[in-house]
Image (tube, rainbow, N blue to C red):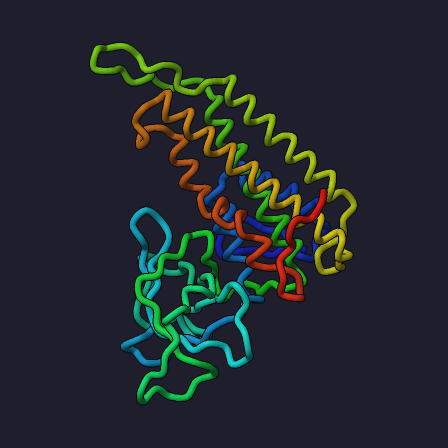
Length: 318
């Protein structure tokens, strides 16, 4: 299945598509443009829908607000009611409004994320009774200035995923992480477009993008891509169902791929900064920033959306 996002954004595959095709599609698009690929994905699919979702407070004085945070992500404040049912699980989804966008602007740009996943532990000490508070579905809590990374923000109006769609989310996120990292190693290996900056004595600091290091890191990604692609070969769509043992193995492989991506990106960035010196001028730094939401999400994907039983896979053998 394909679904079209708003305007001329990318067309994306969903949980009705075979996982091998999902992997190839998202890896390729994230390699081409990590930022656009992630925006298209979160605009099309509300991956936070299966999480326990709080209800935004209706009082205008305490209406939830998300503001851009220095260094990336969002600063979230406001009042919510906990869900009526018992237990929230390890993650909680916090909307900015009850099914509609608030009338006053809450973001710098219209159409920004309006649903945020936070660890349930942020509720410690935040749940309280409020005199005169209208009855809600559950206990009231207020948060003030909680930082939410961009990778944990999505769109409430997007097509909701189900808990059983977890293998689709894992596959799509791991694919995007591998694609974004591949783009970064490409940038590290590319011929220098300008001379390396000179030191105070006039000596060059060294090569801008060491091809040898880039090739080694690209080889690590190549192996991870092949391994995950082989594991997904012939796998059905998420909505056709995977047997529990297959889901467990997939979750383990996604975690391994995520770890490899983080190591590759960190090594590439260290090499780039060591050779170039000034972070703000190196194009690889901007690529890392563009892929940051994907890198944030892939570290927690199997925890954010675990299988139906609400547990996360732990220590599965490959």
